[in-house]
Length: 347
Image (cartoon, rainbow, N blue to C red):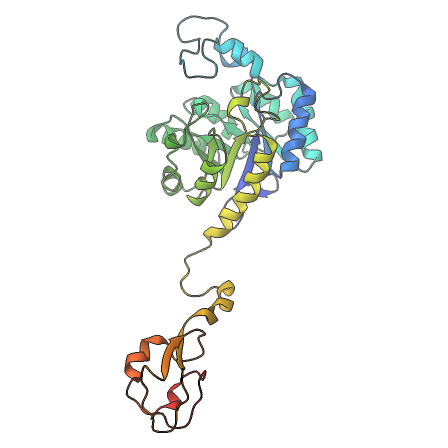
């Protein structure tokens, strides 16, 4: 898969995406500062969200329109008020995208209805994201796929059947480049709900790149995801987790994103391929293996015994597996303590 000039999967290191979400706190300057912080942390891509409160919900407080989970960061708030606070004003988005591009960082967005797709098409974004809650919005998936641009689909909460419907809808509408993200749609998410072993299964079932949209605290879960085969990791970014932003409580600060970028490459490098025997880096350590040495001076005709041969380091002599076979055999010449034992020394 390829987004902008970034190759995803295959022999390429994992891609780290910084999600800005609502952490701009309704300040364009802060949004641009988040972009700069993401760039400085070394991320590959930055993602926005393109919606308004009115394109995503209704302005009412009836049943179902209020966050009812007491454990939620947003308990008691209406969806409309929450999205009004969290949305990124559309008037800012071209400035944010062009600023990211000027820094050499690709920038794209999550879309939530056809108007957001039409708007972003005019800005020529390189890709689109379908949020977890939108995976059942098949008309939206069809609309995005018809642009012909790469798309990333989060699968949080989705059954296997719903994922299959979304993928088939995308393919039938013309999508050729798409990826799936494993996701837990709780905020913040618990590691035990991440179920990362799903990643290789998704990859096998749908034949596409698979990654993780992560809402846990810290970088342990996304690093584990890479070990499970994830080629994409998405994390929310905030300048300060204590600043009271709508998503700050489960977002990562710049130094954490920087650590994730560097450690994700190390994890990916460590996976390598199936390997038995010494690697190029092991050659110098081979001398630390044991082998059979003469441990006391011997004369021609002396018999090899535990008195005059010993299994020690380094590895210049015969391998230890021949020790019992050599016992009782005669030396064919005089040898000194410290000589590595070889077959041509024995009768």
